[in-house]
Length: 275
Image (cartoon, rainbow, N blue to C red):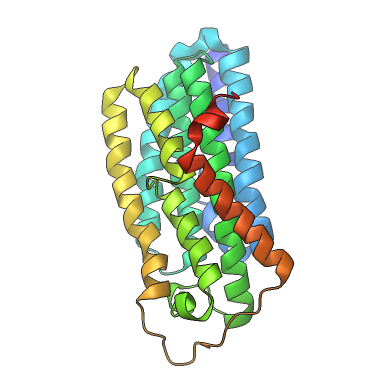
C-alpha cells in the first residue's frame, strides 16, 4: 500500500510540473506574467523534460505498478484535455490562450503513456517523441511572433494581431503555420504528431481516442482565431498599423521554425524512420 501511495504522489508531483489537470491552475497566470522568452522555454523544454521524467519513472522504473498509475494517468488525461481546451477557447489574450493550450497538449502527451500500457512500445514512444518535437517547434515560433507584436504594439490580445497579414506578411505566415500545426491540421508536423499518438492509443482505448479527436476539433476553433484576426479583423482605434520591425536574424529563425514544421508535416517518414 505504501508503494502505491508513493507512486501516486510522484505522479502528482510530475503532473504539476507538466501542467496536467487538476494541477494546472498555476500555468495561465505564470505564463501570462512571465516574459515571453521564458514562457516559450517553460512550455517546451520544461514540459518535454517533465514527460521524459514520466517515462523514466513510470515506464522504465515502475512498469510492474502500472495497475496503480495507469488509471490515474487516464483520469488526468481526460481532465487535462477537457479543461485545457475549454479554457483556451474562452480566452481573449493570445498569450493566455497558448498557456491553456499547453495544458491541453499535456493531455495529448499523456495519451502516449496510456498507449504504452506500462511499456515503452515502439508506436507509443515514436508518437511521444514526434509530438513533442512538432509541438515544441510550433510553440517557439508562435511565441516568437507574439513577442515581436507585443513589444511594438503593446498588445497581447487578438486585437493586437489585426492587420498583421497586411503589414508583416512573413510574421503572419509563420504564426499561421504554427497555429495550424498546434491545431493538428494536415501538412504540418502537429497533424502527424497527433496521428501517431492516436494510432498508438487506438489499440488500447478507442473511446479515449474519440474523446481526444473531439477535443482536437475544439482546439481548431481557438487556433484559428489568431489567423482570422491577422487577415480579416479590422484594426481597432489605438492599435498601431505600422509594420513591425524585424531584423534579419529574427526573420531567419522564424522561417527555419516554419520550414521545420512544414517538413515534419510533408515528410514525416524521414524523421520516424530515424526513431
